Length: 123
Image (cartoon, rainbow, N blue to C red; front, side, top):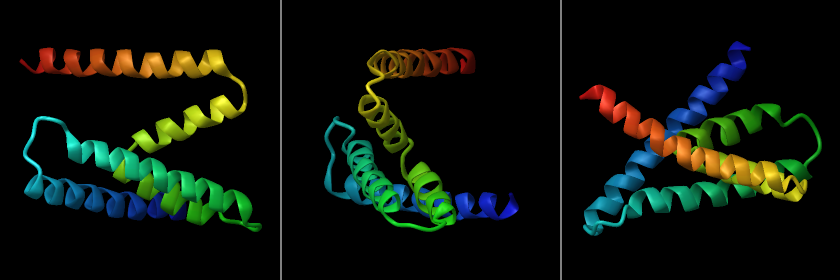
């Protein structure tokens, strides 16, 4: 268990650092209202998690440590949107369309409400 926590923590730290650097570099060259840094991070994160899930799904053997380091840790630290997207793809592949729609809508609606509530309570 401790090893798993350390793998996730290391991957998460690396993902968070890369997220920060992506934001800094994007802000250096882009100054418009569209949140380009977050958009770039989310799209790159989705691409990376797709590659990793596909790769780890093809190789044999115990790859749990690498999955924890790169998928749970790195991608989770870089952007949780990639996990959200991967889960939705899995629901679609399993023909669980009702759950897919409910999960997507609930995540967006309750996410907005939670941010709003947090802002309201902070005042």
